[in-house]
Amino acid sequence: MAHFQRPHSVREAAYAHLRGAILAGSLLPGTRISEPGLAQELGVSRTPVREALQRLSQEGLVELLPNRGARVRVLSANEVREVYDVRALLEGEAAALAARNATPAELDNLERLLKALDALPKDDYNQQMQVDFDFHTALVEAAHNKTLARIYADLRSSLTLIRSFQRTLSQHPKTRRQHQAILLAIKAHNPQQAAEAARAHVYYFRDLVMQSLREQVWQ
Image (spheres, rainbow, N blue to C red):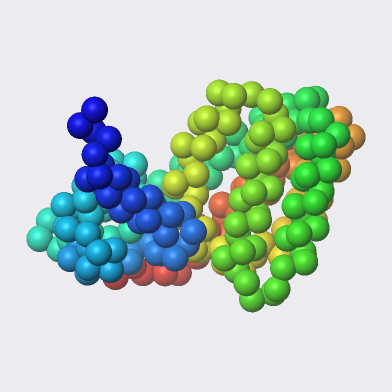
């Protein structure tokens, strides 16, 4: 039972704190992470922080740089394109399945999330992105395919690293129209139309993000 001792919980706490900050967008791609500074902030030794960084590195959220410490991972342009292409496949299939399998309660939840997204303050980008993520996650869950949902969950880390490029677009009129097109096709039980709407939405953002990447030079 040694693995249930307090040092284990400290490691988990350090890991959960860092991972949560990255997924919430508090630590953006390229942000340096000071091992001693974070250890002091959390009131722990450097060992659990180091182990948390190594674990996050294995998950693809953190880069460990030789003699330079750690930073939140920055995806290459090719990786970004790959992530969006896979996301389009997954969400297209999820939307098609949701058009067949979504329950009335799930349809109501999707509609509620879009209304909640529209109602958020215009400058609260982090909350907008969170609700946007919640909508797409609910879409995948409405497909009722556990394998698809698990693969999509694995993709979320990469999507989190990308979303800093689209901070102001969750309430954009075109985004709203695309979300509504997905929902209306699902409610109409039209799998083909739902899949096409979902893929078009993902590809739209892929192209915007790729353009943003071309314009930005990471330090």
